[in-house]
Length: 154
Image (cartoon, rainbow, N blue to C red; front, top):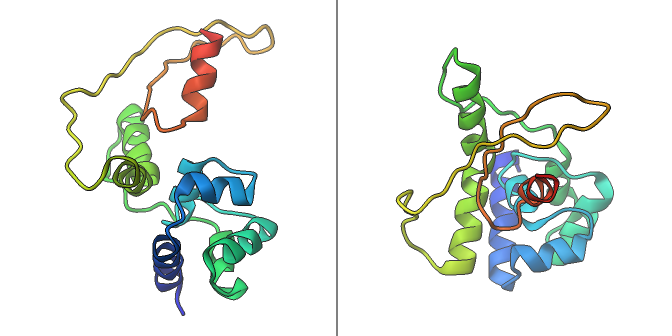
């Protein structure tokens, strides 16, 4: 079975068993739900132990689950020479399918509108060892660990 088919089989098995991404994250114990959703779309990788726990949780064989340990190939982003725009497109490429799955799981199928989307840029406190200014782009509030950490720092 090729990688694409194996990832689809894992997603189908998760859905058939009625396991939410939150429950899957608890079963694996090392990753958050959005990370796992991205991994099941081939955009992040799991280690071998996590893949075995995934196989057990969703009921696929270990060989099928091991496809999640492969290095992701992130080549489907639109071309741009602007580094800022590239990073925004990278967010969509890496997390787009995962966030769609999470939104559908939490809120039902539908169209997510950008009308009520809030984005914030700002200056975070500087860390003494790293005197760098960083802009914060809040993605989706579905358990984004980086956004929570950024809010706690700022």
